[in-house]
Each structure stands twice: as structure tokens, then as C-alpha cells.
Image (cartoon, rainbow, N blue to C red):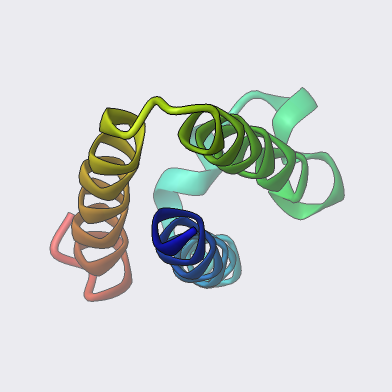
Length: 89
């Protein structure tokens, strides 16, 4: 149960960072394919949601390592969002 709560909180953080990057207007966002840019890139949030749901389902069914993998994924998301939002890349 604790793993699901942690995954859920990490998911909220991932969605927040993802939205901030989409709203940043960074030049790199212009290089996304047109099909993904529709609706301001919000379709990519659907993929983020799918990753979270799969991680939570697997974790709930005894795949505890998935929580660690999702934690690593979240750390990479945080690092990349920081790089983009601070215009370091």
C-alpha cells in the first residue's frame, strides 16, 4: 500500500513537471511532431498517465521493483524538467 501512495505522489509530481515544461514555451517543443503538438502537447500527458497506471498496477500485483524503476524515471523527469525550465539546454 505504501508503494502505491509513493507512486501516486510521484505521478502527481511528474504531471506537474510535464505541464510546466509544456507551458514553458521552450524552443525545443517546436521540434515535436505536429500530431503531438495538437492541443498544446497535452496528448503527451496521456502517455504519462499510462506509464503511471501501469506502474501502479504492476506494483499492486507484487512487482515491487517497478516502484524503484518508476522512482528512477521520476528522477530523470525532474532532472530534464529542471534543465529545460532553467534554460540550461
